[in-house]
Amino acid sequence: MIGFSYLSLMSHINVDSSNQMIYSIVKKAQDNAMNNLDGYSQYGIEFQSNQITIFPGGSYSSTNSLNDTYYFPPEVTLYNLSPADNNPIIFNSVNGQLTNTGVSFDIGNPSYFIVMNINNNGAVY
Image (tube, rainbow, N blue to C red; front, side, top):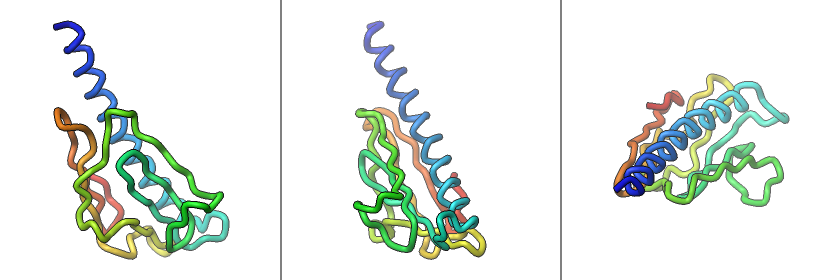
């Protein structure tokens, strides 16, 4: 019983910390675009089930050396991305808003997850 409670607690902690990590990554991508970091007027975020990547420019390339990839703990997954065709999202330099529409997704696992939204203004909730 104690082992199960400990595993459940650790799962909640990992989901909550992943939620905070995503919030920080969104703000970093938005700041990078607004500050024209490395000469790029746009920065984006590519979502995958086990990782999230910040990339420079208006399109994702897995081979770009400037990509910054963050991995979720093994028991945490990103799923139900909606709209599915809005991956990646791109921030512009003028106001840090998205050039495409916002997204929503679940982060976690079947026993505990958080619904996250990123709206057109780049707000995370």
